[in-house]
Picture (cartoon, rainbow, N blue to C red):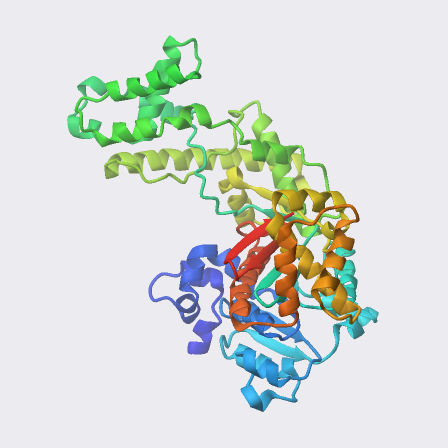
Length: 529
């Protein structure tokens, strides 16, 4: 019986009535964050981790617990006493002399019995040397590496970059209390960015039912209790409508006009302590700060096509094209589809429910019109598109994101970008350059000294460029602990990198675009692009 409950689909589990099943109870908190669609994406994922270091296993811990589908640890390294001392996913002294990947997998799998895992005791360079090995690597959802040899990492990066439909690559480098990591992808599209910015309430472009309600109100003769519980949305729509009648259809523009508009809102009160009108005054910024289409969404409409965009992004771009047509639709309002989601506000239940129903009906009508446009302009995509995907896209149309990344290492070959970054973000760039210099020295099996690291940094930056004082500090720290994989840094990176990996897998929230730099000496993180 328990096995039948455990095998219930995640979609059914999250909508089932009555007692939640074992899977829903296990993943309850995270389902509130990325919902059933995100959990399904996690459970379908296959993760390749190249290395079983303390950092790598900490990352995997934070991916196994939320329920990825499968992971493989690719590592031919034999466990040393140092590994046994800093890696919590090894059997201490009992693991010494045994394949590190083989020792780590059983303990990681104990965290979540629903996750499959396997050790692959091979060297990644051997797999990269054969077509069969390359195909195996390309079959994963995501590839993660830690402190991989520079030349091998470049070869792996080139393989994945040459295959746009292949997995993204997360590359981590750490030395003592310093680290950085980079996510390599051609294009990453996000419809569920979970932005904290509220979508437009269409105050200045109200749909007919909302405008009719606002105009029908007899504010001066209304019951005081009802008057004191009108939602601020209705108050603002009425105030805008009255203002336009006396200002040639224009909205408040100057500071004086905005001040006067706020005064008209407060003059609509019939009692001095009506909090809903105070809320309307506080929300008056929406009248002059809500464009028909946000500038960042407008920019997406003119985004040039990317030849190397992964094929699975085709549906997103078709939806984006339909959205642009929706804005230009002669039957519409020149805006994005309205959202049915309302913020909290001071109101009684009756008025709030009435407002919510109006917005829901308007949202349904505009979504239907969007689907008509999609079917007309992109008929093949309209047939293939999943209805849940369309619903999610329309619901989140105000917060879409398209990220276009760079191949790993591209930043280090762009002298102009490095020079600019050194002047704007000296400490972040200095840390990144020191780690790049360390990778170069390790690949040549050269001795790691302050002098050698500084010379390598100078060669990356280019002759004639003065190095900021931050380089001296970071180079000194890297030279002090060039190979140290510290438990506290491993734990911190484990959470940070796993969080970004989940964003990539679920295509929810906005992942890193560039290098994330970590300094646990002074306790800061930063991003350079």
